Length: 284
Image 1: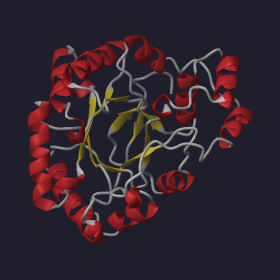
Image 2 (image 1 turned 30 degrees about the vertical axis):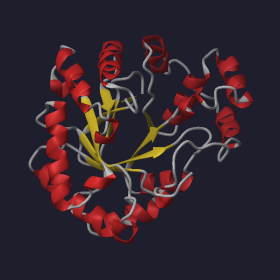
Image 3 (image 1 turned 90 degrees about the vertical axis):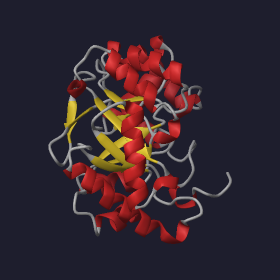
Image 4 (image 1 turned 135 degrees about the horizontal axis):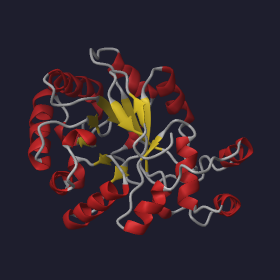
């Protein structure tokens, strides 16, 4: 990969840009400004979700950026409360309305086990997927995937899916490697994405990361993002500041040496920022 617009090829031949821009927890006007800045810098992959409450701002930024819609890759996600066949169809219609688009490039089931419905998660996933398959065949969704699914969640869905799972978006960063899930996805041709690839800023003082940043004359965020990319994982960095958005794109002119990738193995398990997918409803 040589720049932001280089792509991975998903199972169905759809091209996904190798780095995305995340919009988690940014309000509408902040989202609009940041997405416009990201597109101007060269990002072509924008990630949102119904939960974030900013789909309308993402859609407005895409419309106003001056690029043809087909040059941008837009992802949204189905929230837990909307899982099920009919409710998925209704939720997706709302997402399209909010975005002001005729289609999305990627649509994901946001979490595998909705809170309060733990006993029926497998059926809910399968019914949601069935609705998504209909939308896929109708050309409303170009690629289908999931978020926060571990191997046992994926296998349950794959057992009945007619359209294959193409993407799994997981919390992945130098402090949480998710090797079992990543290996499962890679064996099954599922492209992995990393949410919170910068650990939401909580690891910037880590001595291993700081020493590598000094060695390569890069920042700690750039080391984190390069680490993801060298594993074939699509990172989704998020920042509202144009300078940092630009900095997060500057990761194509260096590579971490094998011994430095090995150093980062020592950090696995030190820190996580999200809930465990099997225990989403439990208090942290």
